[in-house]
Length: 253
Image (tube, rainbow, N blue to C red):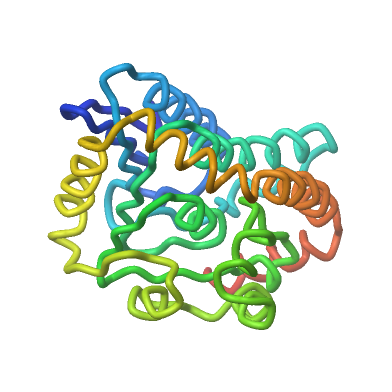
């Protein structure tokens, strides 16, 4: 069973997270399958734009804490997991084709990061985003330590990451972090229509625009990805993180 799918609809590739029974929580298998799907979409000759979405009731509920012990069992396992997470950001941001996020329900932790990595975002009015990492002893990834300060400033970035307060779709729109907010039933059709409109633009020009905009922050993004990977690895290996994850799991029983 694949945990991410790639479907071609005209000039648009639809990439969908396919782990709905776990709210598309991030597992090792999901990261591998999502990388393959995004790579296929970026390489597909007929595709001019990509829509990224999640099946079921949520876009992505963040790291699957049920897999924490497996992810943190050795330095090699930690390094591999952190690298796979950062690879998804590279797939979204450094590929030549514009990526439109179609997001609903929960987009938490890594899921929130992937929303911020998209070039355009259509949000359902049910969207709720937050960063739980600091409470759990984890560290943010997805180059958000570079992207968020540029978008919302230093103090607001600290508030979003350290406090981890829940942000609604309207909150995110007010911050300039999503482009459109629609009823959930209209979200995916609107995102597909937006991507189809993007697809009518010159592929060479849009690829160059993305390269110029991302390239302008590229060194910062690459540096942030490296620093985040190091910090995330250290946090995974910290006994305090294991205690916090275990306490969180007990609260949910």
